[in-house]
Figure 1 (tube, rainbow, N blue to C red):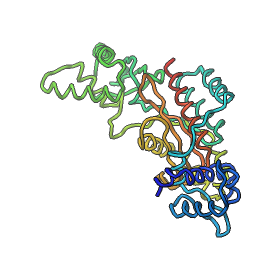
Figure 2 (figure 1 turned 30 degrees about the horizontal axis):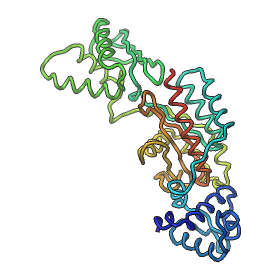
Figure 3 (figure 1 turned 135 degrees about the vertical axis):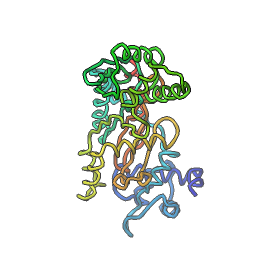
Figure 4 (figure 1 turned 120 degrees about the vertical axis):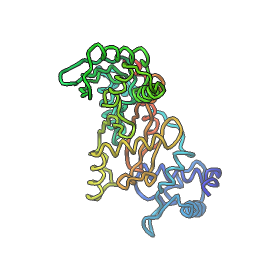
Length: 353
């Protein structure tokens, strides 16, 4: 039935007009209202018949017996995938985005914080930016400094973040000379690798050596074991998540229940849950901008929302994501274009760091 609708110009145009009208007004759409919005004139009777067919197909619902129709989650999905035209941001909006992000001088982390604020401001929804987990950062240089009581200061220069310091405790005493050799080994063998990939390769090489004793590799493996570079995959840390604009979104009429608003705000505060939702969205389809609409989201608190995200890249490798969360009644054309534009800009700006 959905294929018939997308291949039938009359029904496709009608569904697109209903979605756009409802997004604009927030009021159920009747046949008389929609007649003026159609590219080709149709009689009210024809429009009513087509709307009844769309309702039967699960694309429209009728909130009250005498009211018009409203799009369902399935209608929004069909609209995003098959009906909407590619929108462009206005030159003024593009210029504002460029100027806001290009004047960032605080490094990649500051860029991500600025980006979440910008997305919230321009979209009037919730702006999200997910940075890379430590294990996904790209090694530029590493240094180990021996401290007292078997502790080691680890200094990692990685991209797209700058410098990360941590102190770890080894099970055995290791000299500064041994730590220097371990750092030299990692810098010469693995510069440009992700910390996750380095960890996998180090333990693979250690296993392949079996009875052969290589003190350098053993020291490197122990440093990984105590979390000096990347955690075990079973206990992987989440990337940084920046969230802005939650208060302005809950003012939308879709979120008029106090219990509903509290649940939604609680979800935004639970950043680990949001990270899982964003990652699920990124993995749900092919490259480019992804969307999760309404009940496609397994989290009940988010089932009146739409999530639009796109990955950003460093050296042609996806390292994070930007996106917006809004009510399902959002301007998908503009939001998708905005997220795509900001993701490409972030990729370009990160490459300059």
